[in-house]
Length: 251
Image (cartoon, rainbow, N blue to C red; front, side):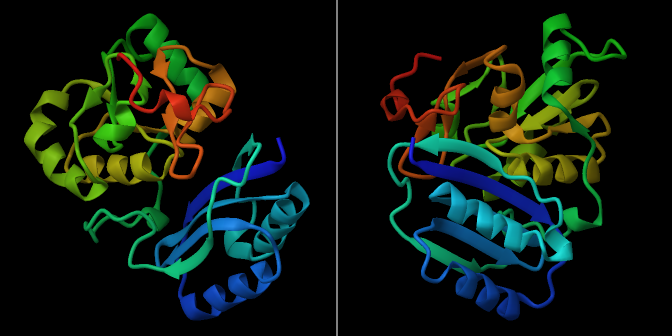
């Protein structure tokens, strides 16, 4: 495995986007790192791959900025470069929801870690005895490659459809402990904030998403692989590329 793949995000107020964009472009110039860095007033979202020394050097440099201090990246390895090009871009949102009232930088929704979620699913309820449901906030084709056993899947085609889907199904979630999940945490964090804003109180995000769950507790209560937005397509519980799993699962 020659290429280190990293994924990281942070919701934090960024007010100097052109300056930050230029600095990141200059830092990456001349490197073999490829992938995407998205910047918005609400924060940063990045998916990058390259030789480990270059990737680690970039992350050390980035975390030298106090706004990104301690930013943790999810790591995996691949035999080939999973990205075709490098893109650093300023966008209105680092993950588009079209719901400007959601401001994750002002405070995170409560999170549940992987081991706690596994324990809840093992016992069939949370620590207060309330029924637990997992809510897939990803696109339908991603869920088709793998998801939690019995997860709620509203078959959305893009994340901007999530607010309307939630409105249509909100009543079904009342009286339950809802754990929203996604690939790496960014979508389920926004989704959890939206649901809490709408008055659903017992809502948690899966901290670190599916990839962290794989790393910390393995495949328990999860069927299949995890779709990723690069040339690997799908990774298994060992975070190894498994592109042959696309469309081949009987879930």
